[in-house]
Amino acid sequence: MLNQIRYFQAVVHFNSFTEAAEECHISQSAISQQIKALEQALGFDLLVRMNRKFELTPAGEHFYKKSLILVADYDRLVQDSIRIARKDHSELRIGYLKGYSGTAIQTAVARFSEQYPDVTVHIISGSHEDLYDALRTEKADLVLNDQRRAFSDEYVNLSLIHMNCLVEIASRNPIAVLETVSSEDLKNTPCILVASRNQQKNEQEYYQNVFGFKGDFLFADSIEEARLMVVQNNGFMPVDDVPEFIGNATTRIPLCRNDSPITRHYCAFWKKDNSGYYIESFAEMLKAVFSEQNN
Image 1 (tube, rainbow, N blue to C red):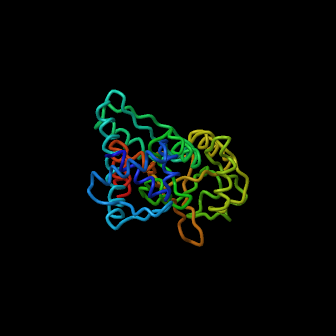
Image 2 (cartoon, rainbow, N blue to C red):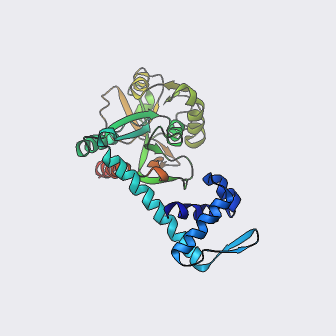
Image 3 (spheres, rainbow, N blue to C red):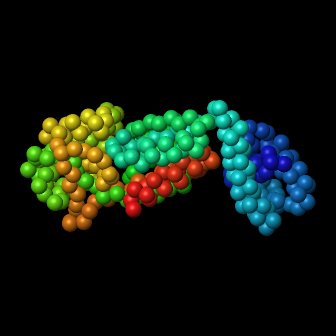
């Protein structure tokens, strides 16, 4: 009956027996016969057929809406059960923003590994666009990313934290004595960004358009490399207000616009059709860590 319900959902979704049959890789006559068999098994009509067209009966409309939830729950149940049954092959693939320097991701991974020692955790890092590509191509199950666009219904968008943005600059730089800085104050100082070569243009445009940085841009492959450039007084690096030991060679200053702090919104993202026990469990751990660190 489950396959018959899926056929019925496809017909309603496409409003066409022909398109539904193509989507389900069966013939039009076969999908019609399957839906008739479903109606016989249920004991009521789902559709009112009118030549080449059809309408949902009131019972059919109710069944369709509730069946979407039923089938989604069933698919998730199967996925979760498979993951649990194959403990020796279970894995969780996590991505995080390359420029994020906090410890929340490491703390959450440590807690997850302690609770689920049989699950292998694979971690990647990348730019904002790299991480979305990883989700789209199923190279990552969940990513820690900043919000730069409207939320998509295709993904679960779990809000984690709003962080104040700072700039990290060499302590010997004259700007380091300021209590706050604006993009105007930094217009003659190069901005150092952590970005792969193929994402340098995207990152530069983001910081120009959203943060208003007007000077030159320099790029590094990692936080460590970027910080060495800062120490040498080659420029400033945008960072988040997270607890971190940075030594005395650099200073962190709040970044403001019109005397108000500039913030960045961090979220955990994963595909709704890939939602499962381990993903949701890790997401909750990550949210808990951010909450603890913010208190």
